[in-house]
Picture (cartoon, rainbow, N blue to C red):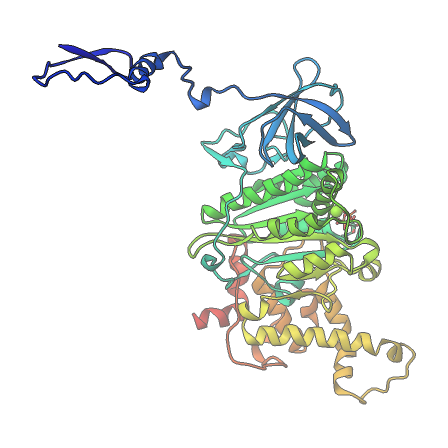
Length: 525
Ligand SMILES: Nc1ncnc2c1ncn2[C@@H]1O[C@H](COP(=O)(O)OP(=O)(O)OP(=O)(O)O)[C@@H](O)[C@H]1O
Ligand SMILES: [Mg+2]
């Protein structure tokens, strides 16, 4: 018996063969190979996951930008920075240059010292989710802001977004009832549509969002309060949402004094939570106040890491980030749920040409403009119907409905164009039939657009009142009951049949059943 060395170093015996032993000289390779394999076990055999994580150290802090060396990390990776004592703060890798890594903190950086230890973390960030999440207020990291109690939850939701193949997205087909008369009837939103709410400060954005949260028929509402004053967060939750609105909402809040990265995270988390409910087949209404603050947070980060400013101080990455966020809303595959999103866009000095407003208008499926002059006249919600548009409305409502909405806008425009003549008495009644109608209808149209903060107007009621308005029923403009509409035909019956209706909430069933337009809809079905 002879022996050979195995890679593990043990000796396995071999049967003796009858072949003659050759007298060739043994090469160095031949004797080295078994020896090396015998020594193999002495090599360090570390499993990759046991490899120590290379921790770096902080070398520089300028404003909100942290510079570290000695790190082996990826762009977007999370790191932990040791601050004095046991305190740690989280930061994200936002750029690098040679051996230097740039990080942005998620929390306040007070107390950070030169040479502080920077440790990379696992990149799979997420949070627990479950039924208890509804009614809660959380921050951009998914931590509760409304007390320490956790909501438990069986599932783990990773923060990383998942993209939907655009060809697999279900088209926008059904209207969504938002409980606001002017929007339901004149700027109908579709389930899965993304619209901008364009307004200057103090014109009524938050109140309008609060009304939609309370009155919509959507299954779930996710509210992102991004970069607003801290006081407003509480006010919005207590006054605008109220207990009723909050019960079926998740609020993600990151006020203006949070670092820019936290504000970005909060916008993304609100979208992620909306995606979670959509993937469960729910119709979600996502309200983001505001998209401008999201863009401004990205601007702060980009400028701090050395990106040059382009349009009005906004670096190019801002305009790339906007569609990345907005495109995540919308419909899922056929049979899945939907995310209908409303993003508020601040128009500084009521300038609709602001670069963010401009870019948002291009990537959204419609815009609702709130006008300061209407608010000053006391018309709330101060929706400027003429300047607003829902791009999907023609595809989701019936022709008679669309015809009435267009006529409504025409009459408002006619009055505005001839306002000066009318007010100085230079217009002679009877000179133009359309202007006569615009003058006669003017107070009723304005009444129709006004709606109290606590007044819910379901979709079928919005339509019935609109139809009664054109039937010459003046009381209809204030949503008063009338029997006249049942008897006569609408003034503008431009096209065939079909009045669309949105999803209904149980409380509105009675109203819907008694509404003549809704009856027309039922007959069609
Ligand atoms: N439907 C309404 N009915 C009556 N008043 C309203 C209505 N909507 C808004 N207002 C009035 O307008 C004020 C400002 O509204 P809101 O706080 O919603 O504005 P905003 O655009 O969110 O302001 P900011 O830019 O400061 O966030 C409210 O305090 C309220 O007085
Ligand atoms: Mg507000």
